[in-house]
Image (cartoon, rainbow over all chains, first blue to last red; front, side, top):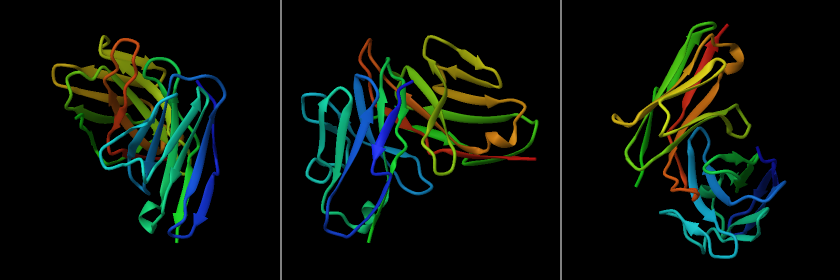
Length: 113
Length: 115
């Protein structure tokens, strides 16, 4: 398995501001993904973070709201822009080393006031 | 696109009994089916997975079965213990060759094992 860390683990932000979440993997991985998990709900894929190219976003998620970077094979960031209370959620990154098998980071709990 | 349905949403069993969680998927191209366990406040943890070329896989008290014709797969936990209490998520993916593809998750099952 891959060891995945995220920073920050939690944050409380004011509406209208932006927060960048970092995801670090202990070794090179082929794919990295970003998910959102609202309280008591399942995981919803936001986007696939592609190394060296633009992220691939799922329906309902746009680059202007959730810009993603992946500068190398071990690191990615997700920014939640112009936040509103509806963005309050847990944001999780995952990494895939071998075919299909994804491991998750510990998550970032975001509260927007 | 792929859609994964999971049942039941909650499941309560007596310690020592078996628990079964079922999922159905819509995309016949799906070929990888993992199960994750998520304890309160923790990250989802992969507990078992199965690929479409296999009908059943076991790992100690946990087993997963896959019926490609019916497009459903199930998680079986035998001799349940209180520490099995958690939310379980199924997922489906349609990786092609060496290319990975996104996971689509079911809605989750909250399992409670009563001592």
